[in-house]
Image (cartoon, rainbow, N blue to C red; front, side, top):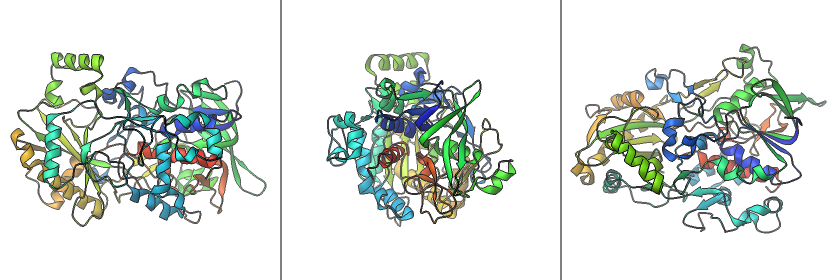
Length: 569
């Protein structure tokens, strides 16, 4: 940490931060610093797919957040995993490759007034870094195929000369199958949900096995994809790990506007200051980003004053608009079929699982948390698929908890487009203190109705002939609960997050008082302009949550941001 002056400083070595580091440091004339609060991703459980069970709730890899007591969950608190390790949440997540639906991005374009966020304009930015196992086509990119974004004589093409051979983000088929999941797929089709082999075409309706971010049975996180070996080999790139940003350094210019000129960082021993000549890129995620903004005097003035922080920019939207996917975990006991519960309930079974992975990189240790997925409508009046199933050949109370001792499968269903909104707010001026996370799940009549309808649909699928040989019996929530009120209340008792927080620094029009960043992801200054030298690039900028897992959409956002900063958009 001898030279503290850089062209770009990126806060957060997670999903967005790793890609941003790769793209910005590709220009050899730019000196780039990436700051990660966690340690390097050299923990073995990060790389073994089933290792998420050992990373969630582990201080080695997780921030160990908890939500506030939530009225919609009948007063329960939830564990709220966030990756505190290089690669961020891509090092501990479910590895599912899902983009969402075209309507998500078209809606962003409407809310921001910027057509560049529409699906057809976003798709090339997904494909640019994609290495799909099926090869390149109209919907997917692959290594060895030049992206349409790099054709012609663009600035981005000159910056990414090394990239013309194809993408870094590997997508593969899962390396296992289960009879119980095949049966559930058939049952879903019998209930009217069509089969599909691709959830990423713009309309994800259907049932099928998820594609995953893995390479030959190993987790493929963003640190592997974008930092190694490219960034590590560049003399203009520097990485700080175990270094936590305490605040942004803001400078008031003669005309009254603000410029971000650097960051204060706790390196574990002392506070150091790093200066950015061009821009600071805030990629600390939907929890960390609003916390850092608020600690720096950017946020709702009453909240900042409450904690003794002088408001520099009164932005009431910072920390608001929190959205997340809440899954309702319906558990069915079964007979006469293998599940992970029974397979892993003995030392011999665990040994066989370990040996299969050691020699073949297949089997339960290669599992994502969910293998089979389905996107459908909770009721006929829904114009688009509005719920997602994650189906697992196992059952437990929550990820990180022990498996149940009986054979069972779990059909978790989540509302893709919740109307409930929550918040992330600092609780202290001390950057070491966790913020208050209040998702406000199931706080609207619409969300409670979707929850009840979803449980009824789950029961209808479980009652189809394809599952009959295994005699499924509903264990949770229990067949005795039938009314909307009962089902919504029971959903509050058993539902858990699937860790997709977004929206806490949302983008919008410059005249939108609750927007935190403009459509080019520059932080608003509260005066009709933007803070010079400061962007937010992570899931917090999503104005509304995507209709599926949020990791790959976050990569797309980062790819677009890098192109914006290169002057190509």
